[in-house]
Image 1 (tube, rainbow, N blue to C red):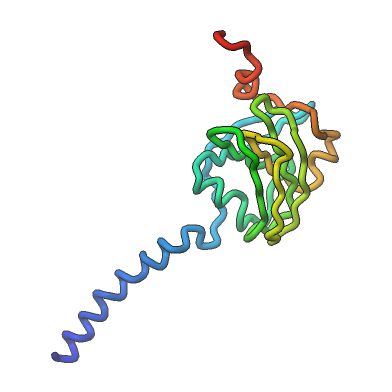
Image 2 (tube, rainbow, N blue to C red):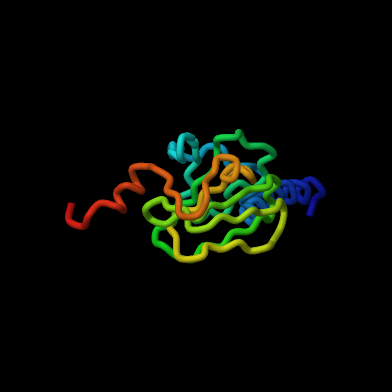
Length: 162
């Protein structure tokens, strides 16, 4: 085989290997910033949240973010209630997770440290988890039993058949 043919064969194979490596690592240290948004009401505070609704969006979450504005967060939306557990691998910000039931009521809060693999779980089955900068809930006087407001939470409170 001529050297030029060998080089051409190698050149054709090289680009084929790059997408495989990228496919094995979907995160590539990039924060997800283009998710749909919603506004929640927490007491007198409005919170702008990104919605993590798919399994991949929930898996990436707030990984690789270096900062997040004070009244912003991420709302993880699950199809059905379940005990939800979170960890902070590849997450650079200290966060607090609020585990919320179907009606938007805070079941429990968990402070989470950056880049930790420690599990933080809901005290009972929940459908939503809201992550905010650590201390945000405390600063605004929000604790377990209090309810956040959004039309999707209100629907859970409506009587059946309505």
